Structure formats: C-alpha cells, structure tokens
Image 1 (cartoon, rainbow, N blue to C red):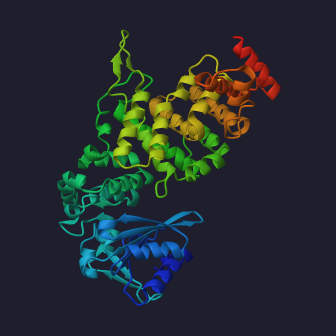
Image 2: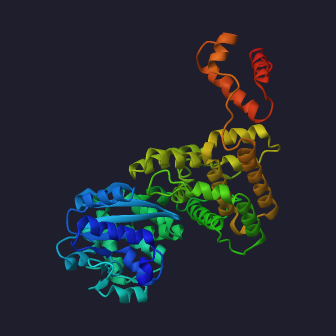
Image 3: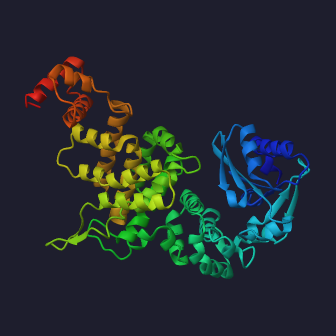
Length: 493
C-alpha cells in the first residue's frame, strides 16, 4: 500500500490539504484506493472532507497552480486537474454525506466504498465496511446498496466503464439493478453523462462497451444513432453490415492508437506494415494524440467517437442501384451534421464538435483519392487544406476504416498502396508545408490596388488558388505570383 503514495505529486496534494484544513478529517476514497489495492497506477484522487468542499478544491488548485472547475455544484464537488510529467492527475474534492459510514454505503460499488483515513498523515488507516477488498480479489462489481443506481443513474454508465477498464464482471443482481435504473438516466446532468462516455472511450475495448450499453438499454439515452445502424447491409468490399463495420472501425482505431504508444502485436504482414508506418510518424502522432481540445477530454477519445459516428449518415442515405449494389451517397456530409447535433446535445465544447464533425465529413476523401487513376500534388494539397491540423487524425481514421471494411479479406497489395498514399500525404503536410498552409505572396489589398479588382468573393477565390499554386511549386516568388495573377485575370490559369 505504501507504493500508492510514492508519487510526490500525490503526497503534495495531501500535505497541502492538511495545511488548508489543519486537523479536520480527510479521507481518500474511490478509484485511488481501489487501484492501490489492485496494485495499478491511478490518475484519479478522490478526497472526502467535511463541508464545504468546493472552496477547498479551488484553493488547492491555486496553491498547486492547477486548473479548477466545479464538477457538481449541487453535490459540492470540485475538480482540480494537475499537469504531470506523463499526463494529468485528476483530484476530486467532495464533502461527505452524513457520517463516513453513510457516505461509503451511498457509493456506487463495494470496490469503491473503501476509504483511507489520512487525517493523521503520513499515518494511513484503511476502512472497508462493505468488504470491497474481497470483491477486488474476486474481480466482481457489486452495488454498494440496492439504491445505488436509482440514487445516481449515471452509475449505469459507470458499470459499463468499469467492466472495460478493470476487466471485472457484475454479479447478477447488480446488473438487474442497473437495468431497472436506466430509464432514470435523463435525470442526470448532461455533463456527467458526457464525462462518463468520454472516460469509457478512453478505456480499452470501446466497441465492447458499446455492445454492453446496448445490452443494458443505454444506447437510446446516449448514442441512439448507433441503433439505427443495425441490420443495414453493404455491398462488397464491405464484409459486414453497417453496425458490425462501425464496431470493427472502432476496434481498429483503438489498435492503431495502441500501436502508436508502442503496443504493436506481431500479427500478419499487413499488421507489421502498419506498425512500420506508424513508427515512421510516431513523434507526430504522439504529439497530436497528447493534445486536449478541452481539459479533461482526450483527443484519443474524440478520435474513437469519430470512428463510432463516421457512418451515422448511412441509414438516411441508403439506395440500391440498377445493378443491385447498395449506395450511401453523401452519407459523409449528412453524418457530419448528425454527429454535430448529437455532441452538442451531450454538451461537448464547440471546438470538439467541429473537430469530430470534420473528420466524419472528410472520412471518405483519402479513399476517394486512392481510387483516382492519377493522384496529383494539387489534389493532395486540397485534402490538406480542407482537413487543416486534423490531417494526421484523418489519416489514422481512414486506415482504420479501410481495415474495418476489408477485415479478413484484406488485399495486401492494396493495403500497401494505401499506406504509401498515407506516407505521401503526411510527407507533403509535414515536410512540404511544415504543418501549415503557405501565406500568399500577395494580399487582398494588392489585388485591389494593382489590378483594380472590387472587394468581394473573387478576391478570396484568387488568393485561395494562389496559395494552392504556391503549395505545389508553381509559384515560388512574389514576381511569380504577379505573373500568375496576370494570367489568371486574362483567363489563362
């Protein structure tokens, strides 16, 4: 147990709280205690104190130069996010409900109803009233009380998340209690539902979590669009229906992310080629995936959500051609609108909504480019221009989509060609453009003053095409740009 406190940041958090609250009772509860007993590293620290808790969390954040935000004002819970050398430490500070005994019995699962009394820190005493330690040994998820889910229905989502992240199984009565409470989920704040879904996506086996949410009846309250994918057939080269294909793409997205982080299985030759490709651009991918569009919600989770939603437009765009082939014309465009609407309803930030919707809208572009008889730098640049800084993520999603389409029927030569195109796109983006679009040699004012072009849409079109000409090497200097505009205006470009 002592190793749980080997992290100097955790020790500093506890010491700081003692300085702020002096001799008041302080307990560590929840995931940190559970993970300490399991023997695994934890990035969460749940702290229980006498009320009020939120001002303490705010002051703790100030003392540690960390981020603070109210997690649940009605329950007096504040969150502190501390940047560490390998990520973040999440510290939730909450007031206890009644006595310690009452608080522990009101928790979700017995494995999370174990406390560490650090009031006399550095002395630590473990309090396990519900025998959660035995359930940890047995890898069982057991409700802390018959009212556990009804008192806080978001725990139905947490049950699914813990099944994935801990590889524990719920005992039968706990599953039944969760099923009964699912219809109460709309009573929970949207933000709490969103946070559980994100943490679920951050865990492994996200596709299995989707299947478990389906079995528990949670999808109508979270991702109803996924239900619409069931049973919708697709023509070759697809080997699965849309629902099954979506789960396969989620799986491949997860495998690709794991491989970027160094966990590459020694599988088929196709898998080894993928691993070699990812290794070539590991630094870039690592850097991208480490970014958080919003504090507390990882880019990896958003990429998995893009994989989950990339075909949400198919149910509403299905058609059958005269040759009997099934088509989904413009499903990418409609899908982007659908996922944007869903993420807004789930209270995601606008930047996250735009990011995921862009990936869904563009997810067919690399595949379409690959089918072109001749792939020009101009076409690659237009893809990069439209994707912006989401380009590396789009490459990863496209590769996952390809593997989730062909599955066991993967054609090795075609896969090698697809990876070669991905290399060409990334090299153009990272080496040719240095990760940003070139600045045009001429400005809108130049177009007005030199050529007398009236302000308006024409100027924007000329400058956009000029940037493209610079990117592909047709224009290398300002003099080249002037000549290029002269030809353009004269109808020769």
